[in-house]
Image (cartoon, rainbow, N blue to C red; front, side, top):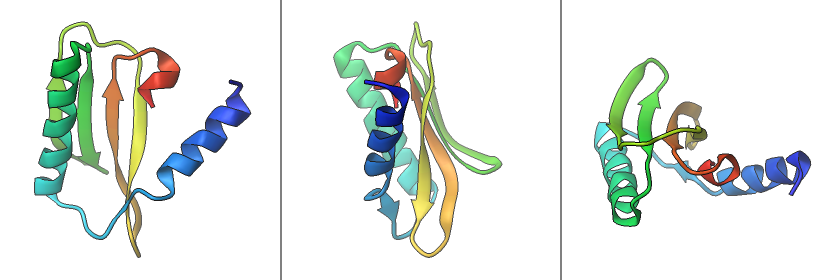
Length: 94
């Protein structure tokens, strides 16, 4: 896969993931679920959920490396923050 294909895939992944609203409870749910999945798979990850300027969830599992981030988008508002999950090989991180 080349970079152009990666960018096209990422755009397709982001398009349907728009929240009707987003708050600290939703951030905790997302972060906790991602951590549970990482622990179950034995994956060395760092998980960071934040709105611009405000950290809402953070977890670090031993051995984390690369970074992959996904925008937090709210309908009618736009991008309000980001979810970062890191630890897999670079292309799989996103």
